[in-house]
Image 1 (cartoon, rainbow, N blue to C red):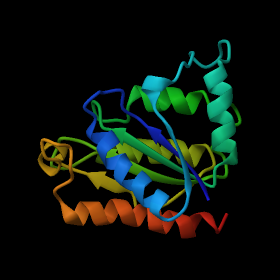
Image 2 (image 1 turned 180 degrees about the vertical axis):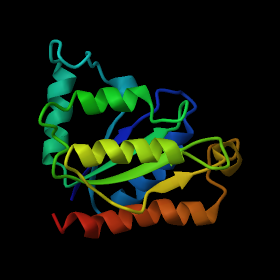
Image 3 (image 1 turned 45 degrees about the vertical axis):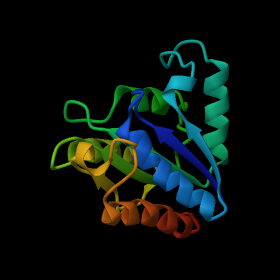
Image 4 (image 1 turned 135 degrees about the vertical axis):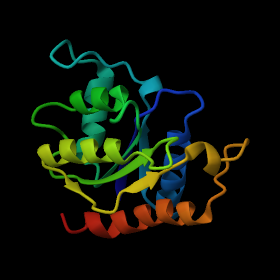
Length: 174
């Protein structure tokens, strides 16, 4: 299976990237081909302007993917602007249409990224994605990763790895 992950954080110390790497590692263990779209390594324009080479490349990667995983921090009660920029650069109709999509939200709040996940779910539904209903909400992110970046919460690790396992089966339905 081909998997594209979309990192919705441009932070050098991203807890979202740490959570996403656990999902990616599990996909790798399962034999999937994984490509990460990292906003720090992409040159994207505002949509409706000149298409960049990165825009063409990421659109093709998503079109060829069986599974797309989106991971976003929660900023001011919603998903990040960089994940929106990536989504908007995937064309119209979107390359995401008809894709099996899994969502991961990360926040410092003890409630996690509930609003970001809710908003991102609305977007994926609007785009015609098959969004997996069991989203992973990482709450209190500054408490679950140690100083080395390792995840200290085994239950959370299981849920992140389970997302990869479940998406492999879920994507076969579409």
